[in-house]
Length: 451
Image 1 (spheres, rainbow, N blue to C red):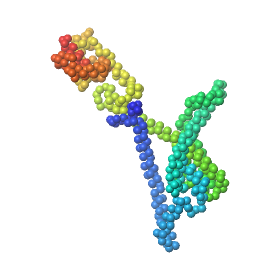
Image 2 (image 1 turned 60 degrees about the vertical axis):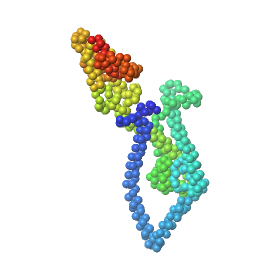
Image 3 (image 1 turned 120 degrees about the vertical axis):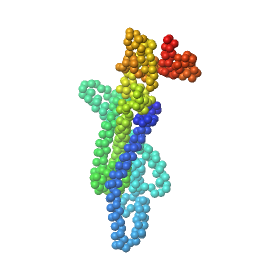
């Protein structure tokens, strides 16, 4: 859990966001945007046609009531009663019974596959209650079947890829142990290196779905007298388990070769739903990879932000998404910069009587020319620059003297209890302090006593 929090990204001064939560929020935002765009497009396409249809229906009602002198209210009552009868399975067109064995079998197939066309629905209380429990178990089992189907597809592709590789090796004169000679466990283990890419699986499933949909559309257009486009539309709506119910196959009372057609219809729906559902699973993996790519682009890397503080190396403080991360989780260029900055050599002993000043939380060390050995200051080299006469930060000074946590705690305790030498420090005008400041004060005290 700590690793996930550390790998979370944020470019705001707040706490880092969990990666899974960020992916979920991003996906929710994209889905919301997708729904809004789809609603706007469908409204622009369908709403004008709906207005024209309502006007045409109103004109037809007015013409019918005037011609046959029928009361408009009584006609509306008759139409409502027809809708109620239609809900019970009674329709004007001569269609096959909805609840005979074949019709009931077709209904339960649409339930467990989550298609739900809506042309057949239970009307009794017992039937509705039974549907709840039947659909709960049936839909769960069908989803498990779809997942296992996808696993079998991936395993089959792995077998094909391994077989092709072994065939190329045999053609090259290399002896290969066949899968029959290996045990079943070793055979399964040998497939680990042959798992196909997600894009390859998506391509295979996409081609299979297109082939099944085109073949089924040819059957439906000839048997249901639909156009080929309407047949393709029905195949996608049915195979994707959307199931609008505006077009439903195998609803007429009589067909040419009725038994063969119903069998072919069930097989096409079963294979189509399996392929489309598996394709949806693979596409969801690709969408997740796309979300991860977008999140990686949104992560602030530190090198694209200007630091507001004046201390060198303060990118570590300015970029909140890098706080709390381990050193090996940093980018390569940031790790190299940090290594160069933390590389501090021991302080030179050629400046024992140097003058020390404090400015903006850092220590400035200036050596007197008359006390320098050899008459010149020996400069300390730190990351390609001179330390003598230049500012060094408190962090660099602590790193150079290797101040440990135990030493800091000891200094804190001594400061709180007035330390072992409070009067000694105050006689020279220096207080104990904590951390790098305490070390510098002790050095100044020693220098003052020597003088």
